[in-house]
Image 1 (cartoon, rainbow, N blue to C red):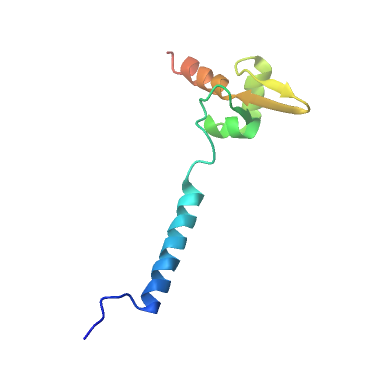
Image 2 (image 1 turned 180 degrees about the vertical axis):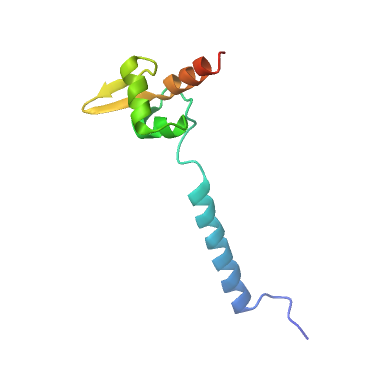
Length: 93
């Protein structure tokens, strides 16, 4: 007669599947708050990724004044609100 309690093997398999699922979710979930959050400062690389642009194009937008940025120490950072403003301006809103 089969026992209704899971076997040791089943328990180990379930634990391994749960661990694998947690690792997959951690790899695909967003790392931080939404890009449009006004209090979030993004690296130029992160802003470029959010805009689906290259780093060089993003720097050109900053230099031309079309994308707002701030300098913090030696780093150039882009406020999340500037990314949202750029998208709104590019879409004609």
